[in-house]
Image (cartoon, rainbow, N blue to C red; front, side, top):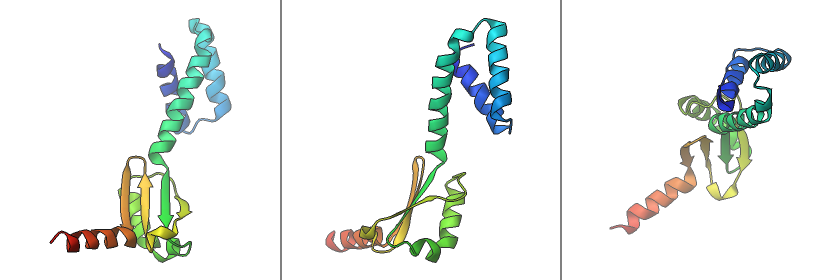
Length: 130
């Protein structure tokens, strides 16, 4: 087995709800039994990379013009959050006053821009294109 195979197995065990101590003990026992103990540093690097990638794909960031906008748009944000497939229960909230109003929700490679800034830019482009 390669290091990334072991890392994938570790992630599967973690997602299945196994505790860290049990996972590590099982890994060490398996590596010793197969004579693969020297792969441990590479396995840990591969595991860390896979965890970071998983975190990047599933973390949500919510950008609002004012902090109270997160509450004001709570229902549509929650619906967009579910639609984009984010697994975080609460997105990280960032305030950006250039948005004017509304919100931008980003998860991994998906983005939903429901900001007033975007609406105003689209309106400006339609008006000046004529």
